[in-house]
Length: 431
Image (cartoon, rainbow, N blue to C red; front, top):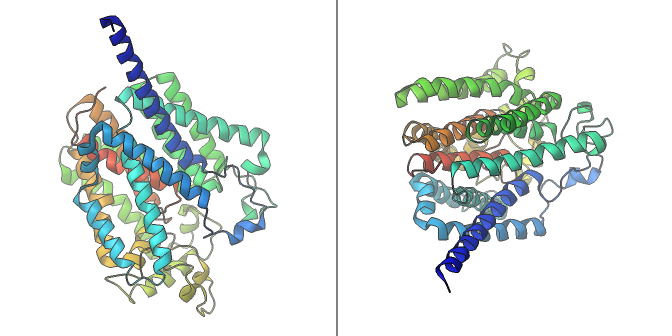
């Protein structure tokens, strides 16, 4: 083989490798966004009975995709991949696994924990697939473009599958709200907020016209989804990101980032135990149709005293037989699917110990890693983008149980951002 032909072979192999990495990255995110059942019909009463139904095909696809990205990411840099998890992540997994032992429903806890770990490892692996920041921006622009095109296509040509209808069995009062290929307008609104952040990132790192188009398209869809929490949280995240960018001390960044988190959780507590926020809460909460939300918070908080340190077992409280069949007079809180507050759910099911570990993983570490970002342009741009997503997930979690929700695309983006912030604080990135 001549030197020229050897060089050509090297180029071909390199291009093929980039193609594989790009395809895997886009596939993972589109699977999280679209799932295997996009554009669901909400007029199908079977949805009411499928809240915990197993999906064998779904499990096979996710595990197969995990195997693929794990193999590729390990070959790229196994040491970098392992370093993304850190002691806090490992300790959290170990404690969650321990709670299975005393769980109200061990089988349910094992299934949920297993899938959560699959999602988290997948999110860490995909961080290693892009070859540069510009490449990452191109891939995210592709994902955002496909998401927006399909959502607007659905609204225009499949309105009964993309816009809430008065004939929906679940929440018919939401008719007219855009949901795209998602199952609910709240999910659509949350994703569109993340797509706005993505558009701004693309505008700074790849193409201003393309990035502005993505951000504008996502914002318009967000407005028509009428998802109140994302509309409320979006400007808060933008302000927090801006202020933290000006702060030079880690303590200052932490105070700025955590203040909205405390306020939003305070809204829940005050809304549960006082009448002062009775008129405000419905406009702040993500799901205005959930009129018994304060009942759910009261019900959940009352049960915290049962197992305050250890919890009831990883995500084994709501819709277990002991809770669902309990005799509760005057409210229907025992039939709720979650607490509508992620930290409250984690305390209920993994105890104060679990909550402390999660606070380190999802609150303290992201802010610290954002502060410790390496002084390189690529690292700074990535860190700023991911910090917005991490804060959005954190604040949204005050009104919805997003954290460690195995089926939440917001959780996937959120943990992707948490791992990415750790990466940007430790590994020099190419522009």
